[in-house]
Length: 418
Picture 1: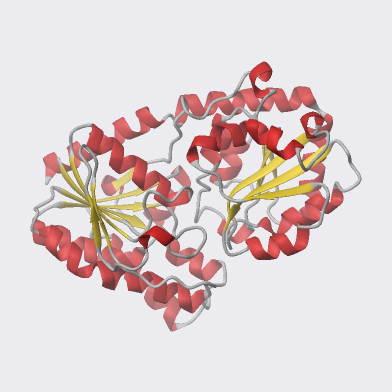
Picture 2: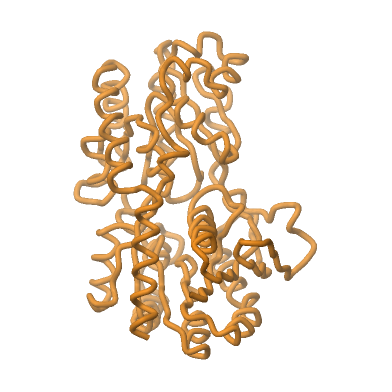
């Protein structure tokens, strides 16, 4: 198949949507499909274009056996506010317009676009119509809903109504609309997308690359050994890890009071690893705490060591994010065979996935979070049991090969019907 992928975020971004779109495109190319990608230069989660991608508006990356990648310009605000985010997203759509029109003449069989950004949906639809191709909208985040519910844009009024109306109009034009969780598929259905057009396409994890390390080997974990230089006795401590984007949807404002609550517990140490708009504030809150270490975002080749360095994973999430987003880092947490403490409302997808594989507490409830963490700190057998269940779930439901093989079958079925 000839597949044109259109998305804001792409490899070599190490977290979130860019990671998954990059892995998907590479996997499809390895399967023998012709894959072309139109994407922005890497900028996330640091909110600045990577240095080696600066200075050139348009560039094309070609390598044998790999997707052809067209990079297009965009505006990246240093401090992303609501209006600046809108300009940022719109700039990508405008910058990619000439490239998408040109690629339509390549005559792809499928135009696959990723939300965010929904700003690109009209252009993806137009390119698909121009090429006579099938169209597929894949929802990683319900961007429009999240912008209002998280307070990035005013939740009522003409802007709100117009945005939801446009979203419904353009989403209904796609031949397929997919979401990364059953709850997100349900939300798409509630927005008026017909059942025959809806597909579940979950995020995945490479369960071979991310796996529990045997205790006798993990005793020499390089992450722990590096921490030992600054944290005496770290080998014997229970390490609680938050790793990933530090942004508006993560609810990481709970991490500072959590660390404070355990300041006198010498059994515990916190490791906060990542980057994003909230990181400077987090550094100001915890940077001087003896029981906290901050690390930058780690490269993929160190990810398994990082996840295995933890005894407990932390997954805070804001209540108003609900099922608008599904944290991409959860797949790796589960695959590492460590229990997760998540803040999520009952009935949400995060709560349903973590239940029985970790502990779930109400979102934004600092006291409940403290109690859940203390319970796991005090109960090593419980940590071990929940960690085993987490690993089993990842292997049975989130394996990269099985998820992408099903996606490939869905793509072929769509092309056959077009």
